[in-house]
Image (cartoon, rainbow over all chains, first blue to last red):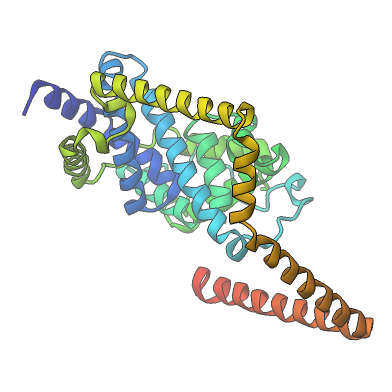
Length: 187
Length: 154
């Protein structure tokens, strides 16, 4: 293995979990996330001379992974939008209080170890429809603002807010249903 | 107790904070290097322009410029030169069959228009409405079946 390859291998090993996680949270499909991660690192290799010593390499990889995942989803969505997304969102529903009633705990995972927490969240995210999961992930994991999400997804600010609110409700219900928080939630 | 928007956001935020990354598949590293090797093995002329060797890029640039100059010069001479009218005559002679095609299209258009005018409007619009309704029904049934049996099979 050449020194350049060894450097790139070390670079990949440092960031591959982060890149794969970013992709899989957005597309909710392991095989597609692996394809996207591969594409991210192929692009990284093209820019490796500047990335290898850059302190912002992680941010660059995360941005590329996010954009490639969104491109992938947009392509898929255009193909299937009519069939899968033609139910209307309730336009007035976004302002109503969430329909979740339980004692407010500190988190959903008191007494749950880190690996189980991760698995529970991944499973719960997979149950959300794309239109809820994607803005939720961009907001809570990628730290994008509502405006940035609306711009990236090409939808209105109001829709982003409504979708994220619905996604939080659905995620809360899914996590409550998962059983780990039954002791603290009276869902 | 009912959670407010802010309480729900805080709960979700706290719950998602510090969630660890998933381990990438073991196959990812091998796939990336295999693809890099495949790309490296490609001959330079099958890669994108940015990867061409400098002499090839230079030669391609010069050849493109020469080609563009020749095209411009030929067009200029055709337009300005004395042979322009001769050329126009030769071209129109060779494309004379287009006149016949135009005449046939005109006849077909006139015939179609006459037939359309002879059909009562009620029949015409009724047929169009029926075709539209059939089309909408097929798409609607297909979309509903997809959502019921494929997307949400439970």
